[in-house]
Image (cartoon, rainbow, N blue to C red; front, side, top):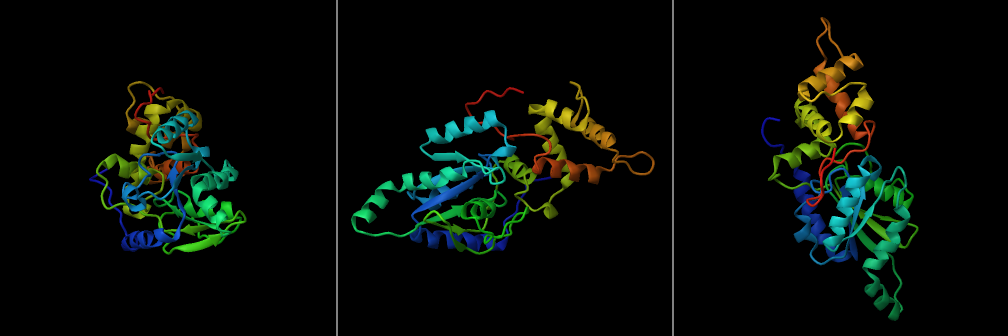
Length: 289
């Protein structure tokens, strides 16, 4: 990629102010991370924004993630003192565990309210960066279709309260990135998962970055998906061309269709058609191909 990726639409500054002003209205926060990149998908600004507010961390889209690496991240986050669940809305994984986890976080407050004879729904803010599945989670959890959910970033622009059948009200919030990625690799990983609008990206270069990460850690899955063999001396360009030719993505004269190949690679990765991948490792994890 030529230079760092920067994408911070104007509505995000407004969204940040709204988050701050709404915190006093909520009992707890649900922070949603992408299970395929638990480090890169966490907005570093959230630490200071939420303060001491009880927080449940959900590793979403877990059906698309490497199970072994996912467990490493769960252990890492739990060692940091966080309450963590790996969930998947499409597979309905661990959605039923969210309510008990939330109530456990605010157990003392619930006991105080009960002693005063107070009964009211828990009010919980759902936060995360763009395209981690906040609105899809809310729709799945509340059994409604009230949160606007699409497979592209930046769809939710305004906050909205949505009631659930479990005595919990969820506040849907816009996806919030931060102004600058100190590590350029963070922007690349986010772009690979669709957290940044494709319209501002060089998809050909991005597909090569993705292919490089996958070929390094998961070569067998790439070989199985595309029916190719990756030799020790192959460059990423060689692998890209092999995939294009195997799929028949060719122009007149036998040249590969780079644009189509790049688009298919990214689309199939994002849809989970290549297999289960996690694009980063927990700091203490030993990486084994």
